[in-house]
Image (cartoon, rainbow, N blue to C red; front, side):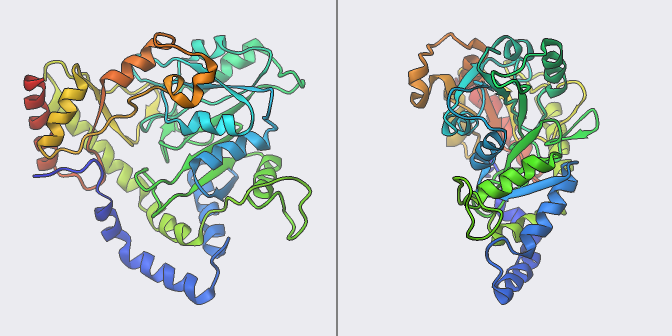
Length: 377
């Protein structure tokens, strides 16, 4: 029995009729760019994120970049970013002209280390970008408390902003508060494999700040809030109406699908209890995890992964090279050992298949293969 890392075909079967009707509606109306379905999805996702505004954009990296640009982040600024994340987090910073300043991760949850992040603040720091990783929210409340205690303004006199990277945590909660509502502004991704995934690239910016929302709306459309009037340089990064149709259908099912993921994670916890040399993932106190990924820590990870693949288990690695050691950021001068927890995670973390609709038999098959792989490694 082959077990995929994620089963997108199952999701499509659940919404196929609704998507077909929605696409027919879009084609009939010819509302292909920023049509009614985009506006409807933006309202629905804002509500699902516990915020006032949602602006649909082309992808998650654009969402983070536009959020930063809306805050005025640019050349000469610094933004503190976890080294243990997908490279898109740091690329969004670099694309504004600012410099990413990396920070290590917590050894148990792999989320941003709050004390480390506060310790990386310098005179050019303009923003912090905590990443909600693997399906749970970073300790952004503690980060904000630390910022308040520092009372450190940026060089322009503005307070340091918090830009929440919520790409892996749609509908997750921390102390009852929803993902995307912790930052001054947040970016998320609807890449197909996300908990809320489109049928291609898509993303969104969410915020409670009316002025920031207006800035992002202008930036996503050539720097214009009024057709053919362009007072500033902007981008062409809009949420496609076809993707909005898909996302609306999936959003209505997101809470139920996240519950499926939680049940699957609990089942893995039970199945893996007592399995030698396999460290199960930890949930930060106060978090309601949505299990975008179920990551375990194993020795000889790469050999275990190869063995699982040979056995038909599509496990994965998130992420095999921490951002500070990527060639894209070689100019920053980092070396192995600079952020040891992120590097350890890169060498030991293994993502097991998890998705809505995964069966008990599939999970039992995964764990049996993992036990066998560990013995062979």
